[in-house]
Length: 275
Length: 300
Image (cartoon, rainbow over all chains, first blue to last red; front, side, top):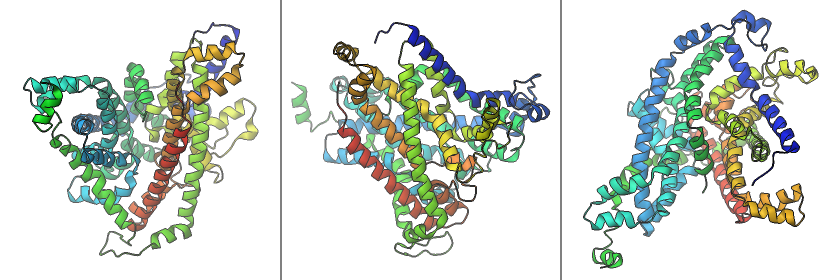
């Protein structure tokens, strides 16, 4: 809709900016406090820092071992995403092109996983991971994320593939390509838009997930960022400057990625969930 | 030879073979199907991790109704879900309508309002724990004092009657921008001609919203209401990090109670029974919403 920028629009602009500033108050508090020493926090908690100090950041980075936590989160997220995309797109290709009753039944079985809360299988799965000796390991988390996010991944891929003409793959098959070749060389490249959405939505979920890594990794050397931050805050709870510096450092990587890719991320979140 | 005859001649060779789905099915069975099925069975036993477990019928469920903390958590979960659905989507819609205009800051505002949604809920909860600081000169209380509303200062997370609403507040702050983004996608799908036609017919601002925009927003409403209801019912991270269910059991949710029953008290059977109740709620809500909200969707 083409609208003129009149006086009313100007007023609306002012109101929206005021709302945004109020909305950003917690972020202002976060940054301000992370730049103050204990004394400044005690005397003037909300005023801008008079003499900003960056000591909290170096301290927090070291005491929370954020370097290793970021590495753990990165390994788990990246490997899980690669597996989800590979395993999910193969399965969705079969489910989208198989018209039989079996194929449909299998599709419904996968979709069931979107509705089932994972807490229902939480304890049996915990026992399973424990008896396989995978508590405190990358592998345990990676298998968990691949399984738990498959339903949603398959749902997105299947919907997309169904809307795609089968002719490209069929032409390759008639030219003598095998199904494997037809999929990897012809179909998969056509899935790029939905692969982007799958990537973004799963990445944000896995990176931020807390409950299961707390169970599987808590106390180990493989703790992800949210679990490490949880332990760190518990330890230094009254030292707001230090805690907030830790929060800033821990939130920064995903915020930077978001700001760089914001158009795609917002589009992914807005479109990926349409049933 | 046409494609159709090839398909017939070779018994459907154009269809991908079943083994394309095999790896997915194997992982899914291992991580979701098998644990969920055995979880459902354990919900009817007295399993506690030590020794044998035996079936105890519906004992776990009647225990749930007699256990004050668990019953309270059920009520809290429902109250939290309702509050989050209404406020988060109300705020999200208002933001979307404000941003979907000719204002110059719209691209920036969209990013600002959405940004908290990509940050870990645990970290947002710790940030808000400071915002809800009971000290009179810190956080929200400090702001209230500074603008002359010192009388409204509260012990936001420490007051048992206020704690769950404070938790709802931080959830809304984090995810209102998410609702906004989905509403915006819906608003962009409303054809401008419909608005122009309504304007020519003399419809005012409110009438155009009520009769043109709102019906066409129905798919976005469905998605938003479903996502926020399910998120509200499953709420764990924010509660665990901000109040750990306290003070007392005042802000306990089904997820925090079932977590504690399992990993603090070792009552595995009872914990899975609570998870089953949660699952039934989620399933019931999803069904009702799909049938009811889908029913009022219209196409442009």
